[in-house]
Length: 153
Image (cartoon, rainbow, N blue to C red; front, side):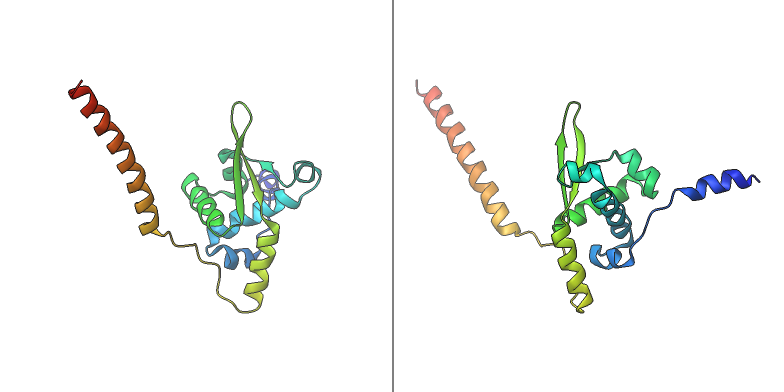
């Protein structure tokens, strides 16, 4: 066994902040959030880009050992509570991330005060369904009226 190899493997560490697990609602979310915090607050690049940083899925895996599905779940959950923003930018398109530090600090303070962890907002399916139905009905009515005009022309 090579001590040099082991030493090399142990050089790449990430800072895991336990409170991020509590804020994110899961260990996977806490690991992702810890690494996003590092890149959001770590120096010149984030400052020059107003907090935005770029990471590939492969880089997330190399840095955190989270699988693609774990990354997707963490991203979804962090976006749902207002902690993570994403945007595609450039050609070819790359995924950029930005942590909402104000929201993060707000949730940490709430946790410190004994308030329950942030829950993902529930979807209001009835409103969404009615909006979708309304749009669908409008399209259906338009198609029907066009077909009627064609049939009677």
